[in-house]
Image (cartoon, rainbow, N blue to C red; front, side, top):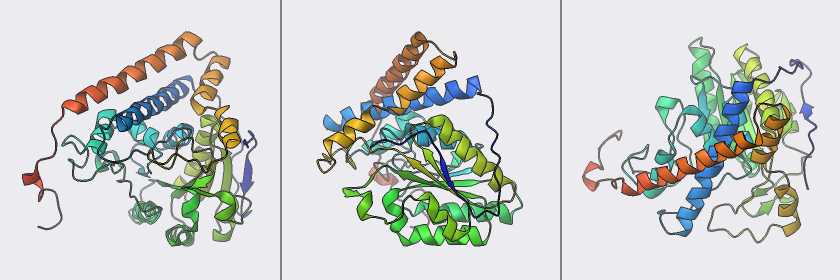
Length: 341
């Protein structure tokens, strides 16, 4: 099962989007590729760290989600509010988070963004306008709705963007966030990462809708379905939603389709996924697909691509060496940076 390059849209018919495709931006494309490659390299290194027993808990990989994480983040300003999830490492990296900080979070080190107080995937940074990802999904949706309300209340042209998985669309937070954002016409963008499985539950058992983008119609907002393997398609769809939100047009829903190529986490063997489904999606690696496009555009040569991959691999290796030497959190620091003690 593979998606095509065609994009389907669901719209209320009351708002029209720009259809013009901008000319390729070489510097933007190269930065997006570097960040996607770094996303993959860091997670590959952390998968090895998990298997070697170097992480304190499990590890949640975003393999095949790189184009979604990077393409969406690249369409925002650094001042916009971002509410990512555990598959969205590339969004953190785009904003400037150091891979060492991410590894430190999974190891309980004092150098983690939370100072070692909260482990595994909870590594947001408010100074980068990144909300700390919660384990309960999609709790970040109403938070992003609140962020969008703050922008509108203050008369600012900021945008809030949040992610969730396909399974999370059945949760009450999903409905409440979209409904409030639509009613108040908030500058909020909701990304649904459709990776075919909600933990071990396939799509056919989580929703009767033909897709998730069409759910936007019920809320009175535009919805768009995009190929989540194609970072340019993701970037362009998000840019259209950002332009609409920033101009006062209200929220949008974007469904980005991909495949979860690892288990829900590394402790999950994902033996419930048909072998042929994995094999079909394996033919479309988002990092390699974009690398081929860069070469077609003559933005990079095969040697350039190889150099980037070697560079980010070394960055991941160096980050691991650094974080292994970092100190653990100190117990006597327990009451610092809390609301009350």
